[in-house]
Image (cartoon, rainbow, N blue to C red; front, side):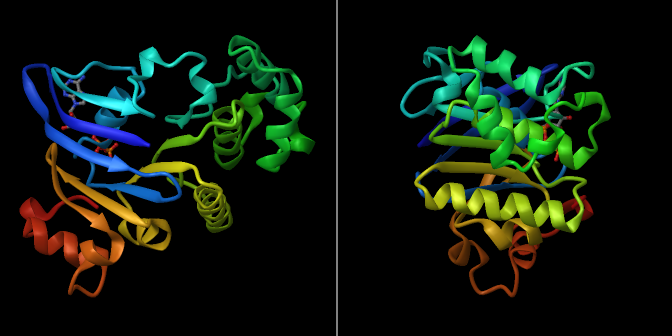
Length: 237
Ligand SMILES: Nc1ncnc2c1ncn2[C@@H]1O[C@H](COP(=O)(O)OP(=O)(O)OP(=O)(O)O)[C@@H](O)[C@H]1O
C-alpha cells in the first residue's frame, strides 16, 4: 500500500508539487500519468526517501521510506538506469546489493532468472543494452521479494518486445498481490496495463480513479486527459 497525503514541494523557489494526494493499493497496477515536467519523478523521489517534501506525508505500508528497516524487503524501486557500476557484472552487482540488505547470495541468481538474464550474469553492466539494463534494475528491485514496486517510466526507450515483457511482468506482480505504482507520460501504454490511474499536471493531481472512470465518456485516456486540461499550451506527450 502506498499513501501520499497532501505532499507539497518547492524547488529553486518554484512550487513543483501542490498538495498531491493519492493511494496505490495491493493487487492493482496504479498508473501515475502526466506530461513531461508534471511532477511524477519529484513525487516518486519523495516517496522513496530521496527528497523531502515541504509538507505532507508519503508512506509505504504505513511508514515513511526512511523508517523502513531493510527497505528492499518492503519496496523495490526502478528509477533511472540499473544503478549498477559499469565495470561490475550483473551477478556481482546483485550480490553486493543483496549483502547490503542482509539477503542471501542465492537471491542474485533467483532474480536474474526471473528477469531472463541468467545467461548474461557474468556480463559487465556497462555492456548491457537499454533493455537489459532495465531488466537488471528490475532484478535489483526484486531482490528482497518486496510487496511494493515503484517504477519511474519503466518502458521508456524499450522495443515492443521489451515493453510487452515489462507489462506482463507488472500485471503478474499485481496479480500476486503486490502494490505496483508506475509513472509514464505514455497514455496508450498505461491504458493497456493500469487498473487505477492518477493524472498529474503542473504539480497537481487533476483526476484519479479506476481506468474506466477516468476515461469516462471519452474514447481514450488521451482524449480524457486533453479534455481535462483543455490541452493547455499544447502539452508535450
Ligand atoms: N532541482 C530542481 N530545481 C528546480 N526545478 C526543478 C528541479 N527538479 C525538478 N524541477 C522542476 O519540477 C517540475 C517537475 O519535474 P519532474 O521531473 O518531477 O517531472 P516529471 O513529471 O517526472 O517529468 P518527465 O516526464 O519529464 O520526467 C518540472 O517543472 C521541473 O522543471
